Amino acid sequence: MNKGVLYGAAAYGLWGFFPIYFKILHAIPAFQMVAHRVVWSLLFLIVLVMARRELASFRSAVTRRTGLIYLGAALLLAVNWGIYIWAVDAGFVIEASLGYFINPLVNVLLGVVLLREKLRSWQLLPVGLATVGVIYLTVNYGGLPWIALALAITFGLYGLMKKVAPLGSLYGLTLETGILFLPALGYLLFEEGQGLGAFGHLGWGITLLVSLSGVITAIPLLLFASGARSIPLTILGLLQYIAPTLQFLIGVFLFGEPLTSSRLVGFSIIWSALLIFSVESFLERRRVIASGAV
Image 1: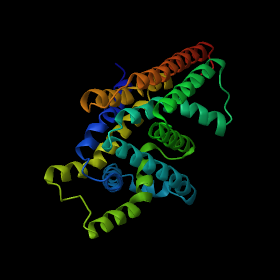
Image 2 (image 1 turned 120 degrees about the horizontal axis):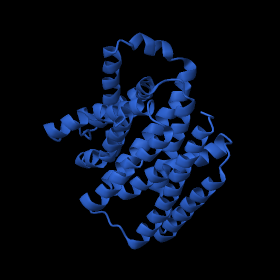
Image 3 (image 1 turned 60 degrees about the vertical axis):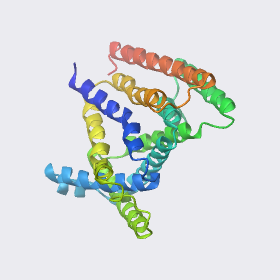
């Protein structure tokens, strides 16, 4: 099997098991966990950059323009992390997984709205179906599935910003966490001063897991970056469903979250849309390759 496929599958597989990790740490408030994730990620990434002897290269790559671009990306990433961790803690793993199921379709809509890309005729059907699915879930929930939509939109916008950003994944994540480092560290010190800090007060096991949040955050991102460089986008697009599928199964079978018939109908509509979208993308890619356009 292609190493790129293995790297990509490993990255999405690790992301798929994130609910278990954050559920273990549910005693730590979501905002504190986001701050810890930022602080420990930066420390790990700086060590990694130094080990690769690229610190000078990283510094030279950071300019005022890149700083402004990554400021927006960092804020979106922090919001996405915060919503996701809170959702896992609050028992909404299934709805969180829905956000990452519909993320590819959100990416398409962002491309149409913000980049003025044109939808192919067969792309209109999955986008329409997904919209119907969200409306159906909204009616049955008695309100918008805001967790799913917020995760899909923030991650979609984050991906859009990364598309135009000049740095690679390692430098980009290092800069993003660097931008958030001082506010995150300040928040953790403030919480500790108020007697609300969780780090070091919940046993050595929890403390160790929190300390490893930087490694746990960075490794799948680095695996993803390695895989993305060596496999076609269509295969990468199919692999991305590993993570939300695992999260969905964990929510249902491990955490015992309710899967009502109405929720299953809504999810099925969206899954049908994703199936059509994936098949259409695969066939279009083959057509382009056959025509010699790539």
